Length: 138
Image (tube, rainbow, N blue to C red; front, side, top):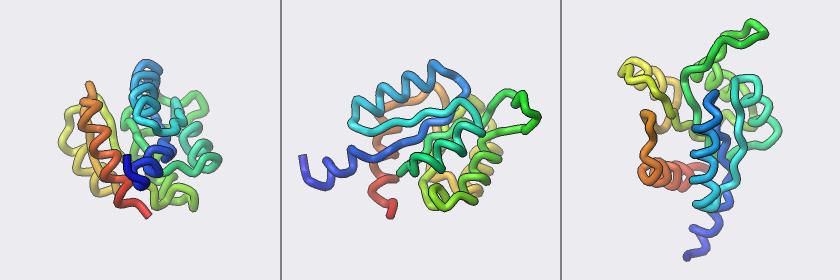
């Protein structure tokens, strides 16, 4: 293993999804690949985690149930908040979603997402894109 590869593997990834099974599955795959993983179930947790943890990459779902507090969080609103945070404004975002809507993909890319994956996730492809995104990150 090269020095660059060992360094890359210690990167911190924030995974944001309202489905705890997806969070657990993706977290286990990422941890198995040597990444540090932080998870969040909704927009509020995601923004707080990004501020607190300063992730190197973010995996973000688009669809979230309505927030009890009245704030309508979705992946696009969460991305807007990330762009406002010093700790997350330049962090690569990869969208993972169950929706098949091509407009969501276009909107995600226009909002700054570096990649777009449909659920169920091909974890090997996801890891390749993560490695490439982290290699290109400052």
